[in-house]
Image (cartoon, rainbow, N blue to C red):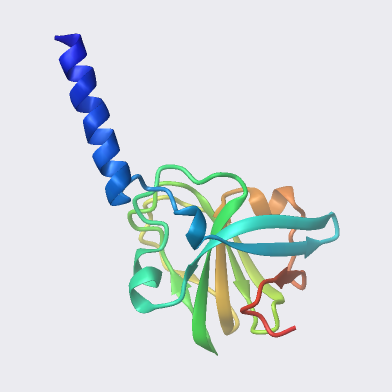
Length: 153
């Protein structure tokens, strides 16, 4: 009986992986991004959310994100932005960024599953979400620079 259960469990896992429902990003969908702080340059791999559907979904329903990963939300124009953590299970640092790639505002350790609105403060062109505590760990401050092709240096 245990062999049969293991067979069905293995088959289900293979099907989920084949359908891309594993909850992990495909390596092909990741782009390099660097954050320059007083403590050095920090490399990340980020998913890009550049259309309404991907921005609406964001990192919802994820239970884990590797420490060197994140999601970059790209917007067509600079404007005040608001986010929330509904259906987001992991604490996140939200980094609000100008079109020039300059950090304008940081919200550390946004509360998982909260519907509290999180404002960008000044208008921004992008928002970078990283695991909660990452901004503090790398010494990120407003005025630091983000390097990625989206930003006009």
